[in-house]
Length: 424
Ligand SMILES: N=CN[C@@H](CCC(=O)O)C(=O)O
Ligand SMILES: [Zn+2]
Image 1 (spheres, rainbow, N blue to C red):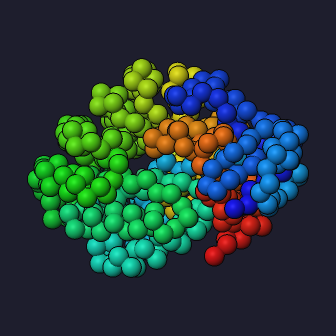
Image 2: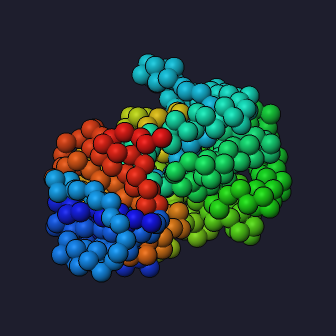
Image 3: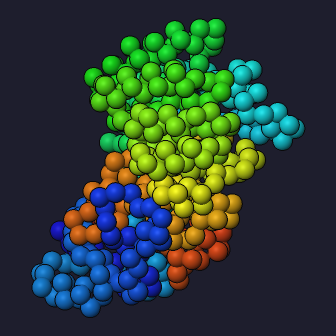
């Protein structure tokens, strides 16, 4: 087996540091950059990270053949991690963009039976094969944008069979596609039309039927709820997340997206791993997230696409909340796989620094999906997931915005994108 030698990056952005906890405050600004640094990979793991002199020395002591990738004019980072996507669904909703441009609100569309519910209709009708194929296209785009691991939620089935169908497709994709996929059960994404007048009946089905089935079939590691005015109440969300916890699914929550609703406070109460969105989080909610060490997953692409004011990332960071970033890839509020563009938006609309956005899409994103010991930084023994960008320094990734700068992507030691092109 040959060694893969990633040679002399203009900047090797290692993110080395304390992996025990997600990074907060000024820790989010520490990237562990090695100028002219190199990485050596053996099989799916990293076996050397550091100066190029050290790499040359390492190679001189090994008899194994070496495949070299020169990165002299480029930067190398850990593979990007997207901790919040709704990957598996059928169809598109471009017509809703037009409706929203004419003044209709996202919630209005959902409450009239469109939005999530129209994707639900299409997803119920789709075969597993069809869902698989549509999702592969999205996964390929993620890889092309430097993303090597994503979280994926169910939530467009809203019946036992259709939620299971979505999660089974995600599981198959995880096994067959280069991307690593961490699954989240989100049966509580919307109230299905058949329970329109009795949401408690649906909540009971989520708790008593769906959660046990998902857990027994090992279809998900996390459980999420859309806790929002007009969707699932605080009481219903708490009931679902407590039941999920008892079943061994870790809680996540869509919180305070459209109105201040107390979702962040609930995240702290149930000990959620992450609270996501948070556009309308209260000051109390911020302090409670910090105290309970809940990670804030911010989705500035969703705010941008829904034309809302983005979350207050500065206040969250300055209050000691660890922040991660994500695309929120879904057909209604964020139809993009470009995590680098989301990083641009995080700088331009939330005043996050170029250093903070890199931490938020690597180490902190790894913590947001409970994978901090295997991915998120370039360290000996970690999985060899790397992105190589065609820029001279990491600041240029944010400055030369809305451009895909990805040159090469390495996943578990294999080159999966080369010169910006997917390797079949
Ligand atoms: N807000 C709830 N769920 C998704 C949107 C899903 C959709 O519109 O299809 C989100 O995170 O933005
Ligand atoms: Zn979402």
